[in-house]
Length: 311
Image (cartoon, rainbow, N blue to C red; front, side):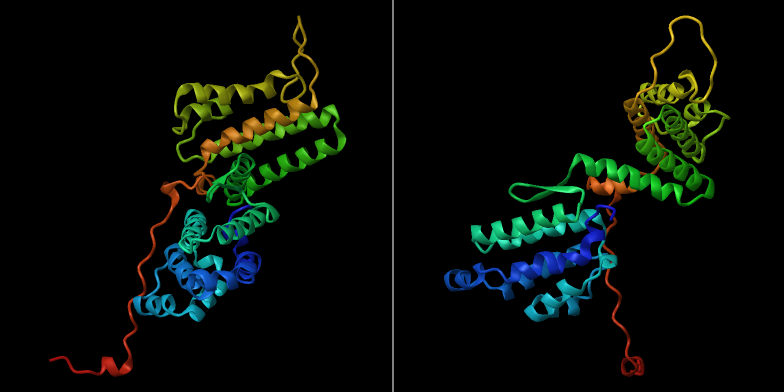
């Protein structure tokens, strides 16, 4: 599970909408306000249609938006691939809450809010629910999105894929052994992964990480660029990681487990500047990555209509 709403969409119907439909609140609500599940589904379908990658044809939209049975069916059968994107999916839940809010029942709002909160936690998604009802990415989810972007980028090229696999292997080996040789290997492999990712930028040139960073046009300013370069240089200056030149004078302290975790994670996170950050920006709900909704397909021309002679 990548932590995205779209990837957990198949569980939305059985874990949110079906339990919500079966809530004990509905019978009393129907008596006091005449708001029923029939009204709920047509209201929610209107919001679902906004989240679709392709807008439904007007005749289809009108038919479903005015038929509770069809609206319920659409909500239960729409596939994740039909959704426009992560931002649109998150907004759908927020808009659905607004539709439920129109019923004027605090109990119904609370029921829906709790089902969504439980869903986010049980499916280990990247979001937390902010009152009254707003989906926002939490900090662990942001880091997860950064790693997901890196995995996607490295999967496109065999050498990058191998560099990522080597780093992941060294990271796991270190967690098992806690041994100093594995600490050094983990830092070294993180540097090699960063070097490989930098070299894949179209404008990159040079035969070392510093030169690559100098040639890449992705930095907000020179201070960030130099900070990333200094992180990489740690592997060269720490004995036994990349080089093993014996220096006279004060020797640096021995590596600790925290060094071999924090330095690679800082370096790997910083290399996000070399990618497109699609997953990260989606998780942050950036408008820059939200695709516009495609227009509906034109109506099909039937054989009888095609045979009608033009005047």
